[in-house]
Amino acid sequence: MRDRLGLDDAGPFGRNGFMVLYVYRAERVPEDRFFRPTVLDAGWRGASIAFLPSPPGLAQPGRTQNLATGQPAEPEVLHAAIGAAEVEECLIAGPLTQDPPDAYKAIRLAGKPISE
Image (tube, rainbow, N blue to C red; front, side, top):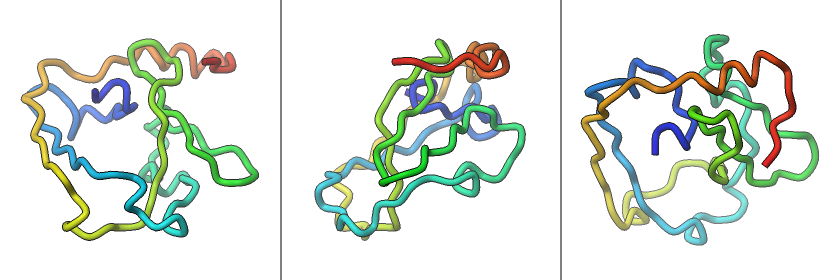
């Protein structure tokens, strides 16, 4: 799951780490609370080359980058904070058994377009 979500920072997402997953229905989030991701949402870190900026135009769901293949993986949207009452389930995944892969870096650094 970490790899398909493009979480490439080995600090919080590396071997022996845990992930907390909040499950809720996107339709419960008011439409005006969705927004286009920016480099600030990626942590403003030059080391995170997994971040791809959203294209210009109307806000649309983006795609995460699969760290193992370098290809697009899951649809992604960002939204403002929601109330805890909206969360249907909270899951703890881990411990993770390996650090994030870096196969995606060769594709990004080669400048090849990413296709689905």
